Amino acid sequence: AIFRTYLSPLEKQRQKEKEPVVRNLPEFVNKLVLLLNAGLVLNSAFERTITESLRFREDDDDYFINRIKEIYVSVKTTNSSINEEFRKFAKENGTMELMRVSNIVNDNINKGVELTEKLQRESETLWINRKKNCEEKGKLAETKLTLPLMIFLIVLIVITVAPALLGL
Image (cartoon, rainbow, N blue to C red; front, side, top):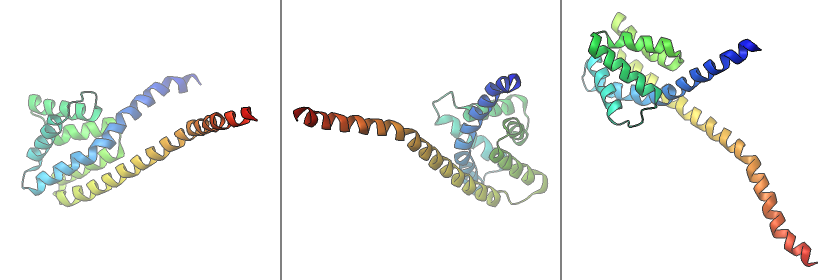
C-alpha cells in the first residue's frame, strides 16, 4: 500500500505528460509530411516544423511544445542530430505513438525506407486515434453530467408541482 501511494504521483505526472503528446503529435507529423512532400530534407523539415509549432503556440505550459523546444535548442547549441534527440524524447516519454514516429524516422536514416508514405499512414492513424480519444472524453463528460442533470430535473419538477399541491 505504501509503495502504491508513493508511485501514484509519479504515475499521474507521467500520464499528464503523455496527454499533450498524443494531442499534438498528429499535427506535428502532418506538418512534417507536408514539408517532406514539398521537397525539404528531413533535418530541414524537422527544424521548420519545430519552429512553426513554436511560433503559433503562446501557451508555455504545453509539455510537448516545451520538449520540442528543448530538442531544438539542444540541437542548435550542441550540434547533435535531431533524430537522435527526438528518439531520446520518445524513449523518455514512453508514448507508443511517439515511439512509432521516432522509429519510422530512424528507419529512414538507417535503412533508407520510404519516409513520406510511412509518415502519411502514421499521421492518418494518429488522427483516427485522436478522434477516438475525443469521443471517449465526450462520452465520459456526458456520463459525469447525468447525475447533476437528474437532480436539476427533480428540483424543477418540485418547483413546478409544489404550487399546485399547495393550492389544493
